[in-house]
Amino acid sequence: MHSEYDPDDNFAHAFGESSDLDDEAALEAVMWQLLLAINPGDDDAAQAQFALWQEASGGTDDLDVALDALREAIDWKSGFHIVEGDTRGLVESLEELASRFDLRIDWGVEDATDDDFLDDTDVSALLDTAFHRLREHHYTLWVRDAGPDLHAGWIAHSRDDENMRAIAEALGIHVRPAAA
Image (cartoon, rainbow, N blue to C red; front, side, top):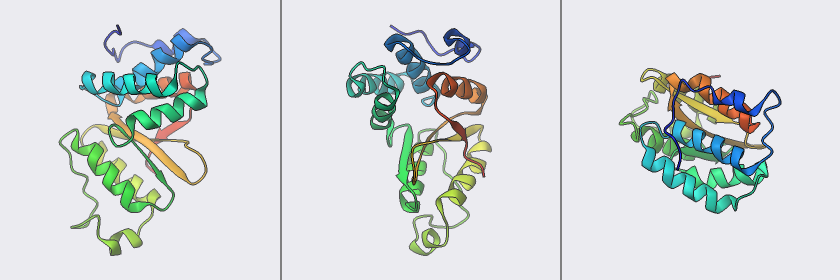
């Protein structure tokens, strides 16, 4: 059904200069590439999340609906979505995502879920720490604009950094590495 993800494939140019996705097939193709990138080495997870995304999006070409469906399909599987100030939710979700790659994020404390630690930090500091710890293992923590007072993102292999930017541009969303 879909070809395997080729990091050397510069598929972003297939959508032209404007990067506007104006048909359902193009949106599905780019969404598939995104799911492959955020599930490195796990095509089965990408396929399962793609099926969930297709069901939740209902075949729309409306980007807002597609992104809501993406959040639903990947939340706590290959992505995170938290409200501002939810330091516990961020630590727990990033720990879960990192464990998929047999990694543990060193937060600089013995227990990153300790209330005192979580009360003395903020989401930005935690994202910065996680970014740098994951980079040590050749992964990039990405965040995307998710709306006011919301944080969302995913982890991808660092060799796919340029492809992630191309995918985001093709989708018309703003992503950036999570480092401050």
